[in-house]
Every structure is written in structure tokens, then in C-alpha cells.
Length: 158
Image 1 (cartoon, rainbow, N blue to C red):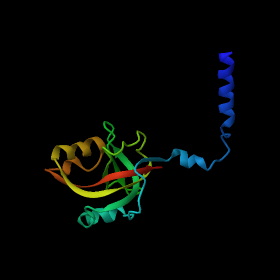
Image 2 (cartoon, rainbow, N blue to C red):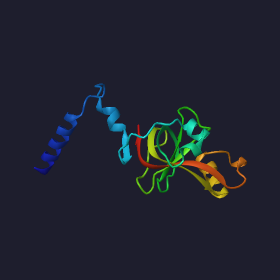
Image 3 (cartoon, rainbow, N blue to C red):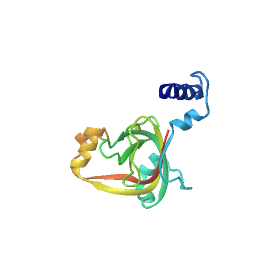
């Protein structure tokens, strides 16, 4: 009898799934992941504009959008956003301790909301980002580096 109930349950679950060629509006929503707090009405800022004048945005809450090209696989507490199709400029989005970056974030588009900060990272850490995560050119690093970061309260990954 337990085997029959198991088979019946599997059959019912399979019957609830749409056919492979049947489009669903929930597909995109099912693949989207929101982590952290819900977005507020923070202004959307282009990554290029933020990097061109980070001091103008320092301490302000903004929303950025772009492609995820790197992340911390160890703690999953940051990811790097680039403007769509560009790898030469990036902003690191710090997520810990508020939320963890989804394991499959690299290659997805994302939006992040948080407070802009300009931090100094050591030469050793900058080289780690360049060599391990391809964020920058390790050959051009010769001391501490100023880096624009967003301390995120929430992010959506598509």
C-alpha cells in the first residue's frame, strides 16, 4: 500500500507540471531570486555614472543594475556588477551580513540596492580580486586601491 501511495503522489505531481512546449508566465518569476530586503524607491544610477563621480554618491542609497561577473564563492558575501556587455568597469556589491549571494549568480543579470561607499583595499586583497576573480589587472596594482562598493540591503537576480 505505501508503494501505491508513492506512485500515486508522483503521478499527481507530474500531471501538475505544464508540458515542455507550454509557455508559462511564471517561468521568469521562478528563475528570479530576490535576497535581502525589498527594494525601496531609491534612484537608479548607471554604473558608469557612479564610477565617474563616486564622491557625489557616497553615503547615498542607490539602485544599480548590470551583469554579475564575479562573486565570493567562500562566504557568498559579495558580487561584482558590470554594465551589460562590459567587463572593464565593475562595482563590488557587499551583501554580508544582510544576505548571501545565490550560488548560481554569475552570468545572471541583477539589480542591487544599497549605500555607496569608497573604501581602500590593500594591495594583497586587490591582487586577489584581480587574479582570482578577474576584477582588474594585477600588473597595474602597486599599492592600496580605492574601490567603490555598494553595501546592499537587497538584490534581485534574474
